Image 1 (cartoon, rainbow, N blue to C red):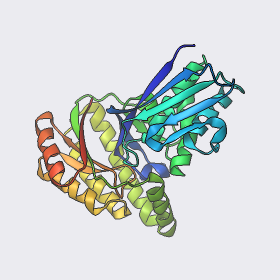
Image 2: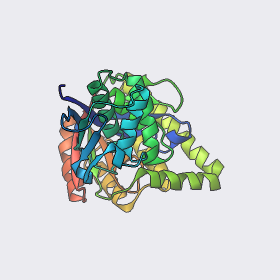
Image 3: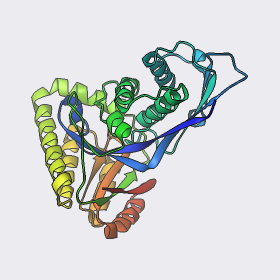
Amino acid sequence: MPVFSAYAPGKIILFGEHAVVYGRPAVAVPVQQVQARAVVEPDLRAPSGQVRLQANAINLNQTLAELPPGQPLAAAVHAVLAALAIGKPPACTIRVTSTIPVAAGLGSGAAVTVAVMRAFSAFLGRPLTDEQVCALAFEIEKLYHGTPSGIDNTVITYAQPVYFIQGQPIKTLRVVEGFSMVIGDSGVKSPTAVSVGDVRRAWQAQHDWFEALFSRIGELAQEACHLLEHGPSRPLGALMDENHALLQEIGVSSPELDKLVQAARQAGAWGAKLSGGGRGGNMIALADAETAGQVVQALQAAGAVRTLVTEVK
């Protein structure tokens, strides 16, 4: 049997994080410069049905039978087998690698899941459709994030900019006026499930106030969708600045993120905000191609542990 491999990009949320969990729209784009990869190859020496999972980044080298069903990589494999109604697959090894930083708002968990599902289903001779991958990956996202919105698995599965409302049909976006986006990593690890859980408890305690904040964030995402599809792009910066202020009010920013956001603005970015769960991880800044280099230098001087420039188009 041949070897099968699959890739999945990272993702970044432009507008709408946290509010998207409560039914408001969000806008996200794929980040192709970082990727997860899964390679599946047959193991002719192993007994039929044995699936070995290897991921050096998390010191994983175990068979599917040795892992608890709730382990995310194991759950992804089980989900494929269940979807295809296969009880005993050919013996194989699944190797997983990723250049996507973990707990940084770049969708590392969803990307690994999507890559594994695509490579494994292809190895089994029955490649899953995008719709199947997206739906199954959403279930695995619950293991990572508790109450995910579904935006990570959606933008990563389809590898296109998306306008997303939970429970509604996916809308992919055609960006008419491209721009540069600088991603700055604060270096602070912050699992999304923790911040999402904290926001939920705060929302329960101050329901009306949080609902008003979520609604305004949703309006910003709607305005951003219109600008992306019809132009111009530069006003997206002001929307981004307001979105960051609202996320500060929600309580998911941090001194490190605020410092990077301010540095990007002072360096000439159109606008900047945190991205993802917050409390750490990444922030993003929008700029034109000429200004992006200045923003990178400013972020590095302000303490960003890594920076990445990607084009949104």
